[in-house]
Image 1 (cartoon, rainbow, N blue to C red):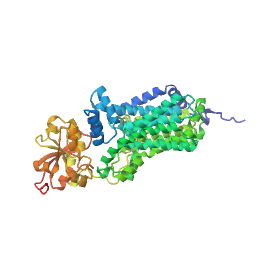
Image 2: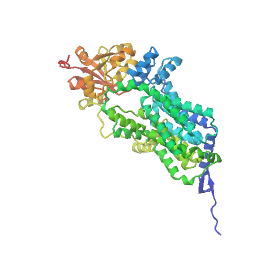
Image 3: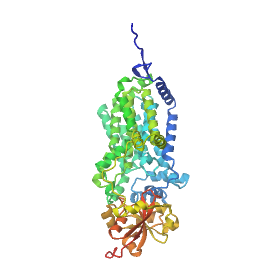
Image 4: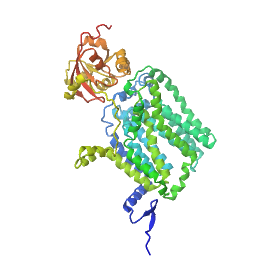
Amino acid sequence: MSSVPKTRVISGWHNIDAESSPLFTVRLLRAFSEFVESHGWVSFAAISLFCGWIHLKTVASRPLDHDELYTFYIAQAPSLKQLLALTRTVDLHPPLSYLLIRTSFAIFGISAWACRLPSVLAFFLASAVLFWLVKRILSSVYATVALLFFWSVPFSYHADEARPYSLVLCFTALMLASWYRAIDDSDCTQTSSSRRFTLLALTAGGFGVLLSHVLAVLPYCLFFAAEVVRFWIRRKTDWRLWLALLVPAISGITYLPLLHIHSGILFANDYRPTPLLIFTFYWDSVRTLVIPLVAVAVLVALGPLFRQSTARDRRSENRLSPTTLYPLGCLLFGLCLVPLAVGILFARTGTAFFERYGIVIFIPIALIPALLLALRTHRNQTAGAAVALFLGVVLFLNTSGRFWLIEQLGNFAPPQVVKYTLYAFALPQIIPQHVQPRVPAHLQKALQEARPVTDLDSIESDLPLVANTGLTFLEIDRRGDAALTERLFLLSDPQAAASVAHDTVFENYDRLLQVFPIRGKVAPYCAFVRAHSRFLVLGAYNHPQGWLLKKLDMEGADLRMIGTYDGITEEAQLYEVTVSQRACAQQP
């Protein structure tokens, strides 16, 4: 009589031959999942420390860039009244981020890292809130999966940017966690007093998100849409929850002066949203996650092979009943569409679009894969542990381990093979069909032969130094010594800015001199070139917002490239300019 191979279920898999199964791998995954389940917050701390070191190690040493300097100066306004006035006239953001940074300055002193501290804390708090939420709904293993997805989004560099975007992410996450707990009918521990606290947290999150950024009104409104879906399912209105959501709407009063001033600004065509630009944003959001997402998709497709691992998972099954699952799904899907909505709105108004405006996409990227995997595998801990470990490896090889991987592959593989192997961990960026050259053809040879310039003070110290854009001007003004800033200029010409660059963002810098401690000077273009026939210009010739170098070139000025300078955020070349005598001859 022939013998029949014995089969048994291993960690949730059905009908797998025990003798041929990778038992060691299964046991390792089970041990990992058991440790994470027992020490969930220890896992959170370890991942956060590792990822925080990778992304935030330059938070104290990196100089503040142009936009951060706006925050830096406004937060130091002599009085709160002046601070609020500057948020309505200069930077056009609600006041919360400036107030938090002002508090940070009061506690830790005025410095670059103290300026970035509220954003850093907000980013960590957002990750902690999302970890808590997924841990509550599913398990610590799936919360770890969500956390690793969260840190793997390429836009994590916004975590230490002294701007309000981390705050938007943090308060949106707080609203999501508070809203979910408020609608979780399966929570037997929730008393009337604890629900009041939950609704208070929801209201605080609403105020926080609306007072951080004007565009935060989009994720804020999605919670009302989710409540409409919940009402359609329950046929019952949760009046207290609606009231908690509605109260923060009064913050919209702070938007009125911002919208009025913003409407008169022109933005460079390169920054205006197009279908390609929006698609590029979504592609860049997930291009380092394609392989982990494929792994999740495979496990989701194999869902019928899994069963529930523990009785604890069966008891938590009702935490995602239709009354909570469908509204949550609609909310997460809506958060995915926020960047698209911003792009459509800005395309109609001619406003610049940057990826930071879609920062709330961190939330669905973190939560949706974890939720789908858990639902399809019945919260199988082994499947969750496998994805978490795989995500950790991919995250390491996309960050601090990238150079190690390149070095190891380079020992036995040609460069082309190394290049395509790296695509397995991070797919390439989308390159537009037409890439504008850095300089025109007649300056191309000079650019190729240009030498690096490290010290601006040593180059023609008797000549004025003119910044091509406000970006360069403000950063050099902050970092340069007294001798350099004494000869630093930014030139203004609204007509040239509108006709050459189609961008008037930097045409209000004469007003900044009155409110910011700027040492450089702002001068009208024609008045300056009449007084100085020879000067230096620092900037990128084809910068989308720069008109000066292009205008000088069109008017026949002699542009001699001295070298390239990398001491600021933007790419920059240093030019010696000799203007024609005909420049501005017929202009008053």
